[in-house]
Image 1 (cartoon, rainbow, N blue to C red):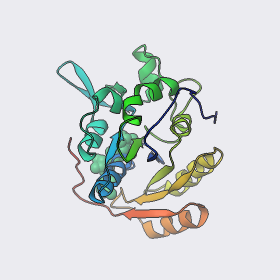
Image 2: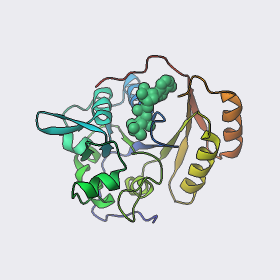
Image 3: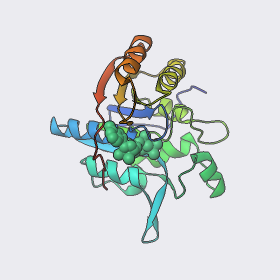
Image 4: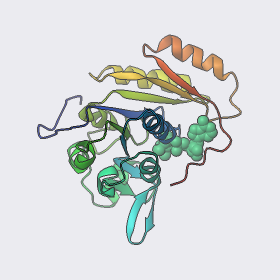
Length: 228
Ligand SMILES: Nc1ncnc2c1ncn2[C@@H]1O[C@H](COP(=O)(O)OP(=O)(O)OP(=O)(O)O)[C@@H](O)[C@H]1O
Ligand SMILES: [Mg+2]
């Protein structure tokens, strides 16, 4: 599926990015938060959202996504209702379509877009949207994160977690991204494995084979613990 859906979908934020990754746990939140902070330091306003987050926790009697709270902290739009920056939160860290089914929730691209409407129509200069998992992480039996990225319509940034296997993951993801009519802003190499051998050589071959700019290289940092 690669259609721009939802006729009623109107966004007033003209600029933004959809952050995807070669996998789960590759640094999407770190990158999304960093981009947001950088934009704020340059004088722009941002809203950063995690439309679907699994692996949440309960506070009071409400379920929160860690990622969404981190993104909220590193963006400067604090007035939006939490439900628009994280419309779907699931407690277990499992694939969203399984979590939705287990909880009897109707998860679809149209639902996600509609429930993030307030964020999309806020008056921020930029919106940064973090996907869940990777490009083809299912949302339901027939839609994936790719469909969501296409529906939002913002340029996509691919975070490549530099670890063994990342070359294959990066090339496969890029090839699939390329089949849809989305704008690929570029990719970011994120050193998530401090014991990775030949990381530079890995980056070189990805650079050679991906027809999209390498936007940045994030070194391994011992203390990245982003708190919310
Ligand atoms: N450059 C880095 N150096 C060291 N640790 C990192 C780096 N980037 C990310 N991490 C760590 O790796 C873990 C995963 O990062 P992050 O949560 O940003 O990934 P993600 O792709 O957003 O994961 P998810 O799929 O759960 O949303 C975190 O504990 C984070 O602190
Ligand atoms: Mg994340």
